[in-house]
Image (cartoon, rainbow, N blue to C red; front, side, top):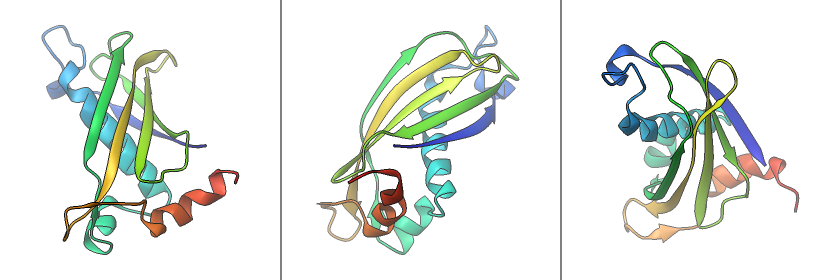
Length: 137
């Protein structure tokens, strides 16, 4: 299993009239978690696309709202890969407030698509190579 934490402060423009993080912004926070997790492995989304010609479109997104995140709170976005990706990659995301309490949680499933053929492909070897040390055979 591989997990990564990233800190993100709730900005004023991301809140609703109640001062809560607007519900429509949570998928963007999930994306921040995914991008920063891959970056922590030394792999950027940009390089997957430009150097390896692989895109990662979202196939499904499920969320649950536990408590509100508020303006100016520094949230922890914890992104976890529970299983080694094969033809799909599934990110489990938990967002915690400054008190360490769960605010939101969810699961995002993506697939790998070759940019030239527009067909699904297995996990790119460059990503698999970086993840293998975290999973026992």
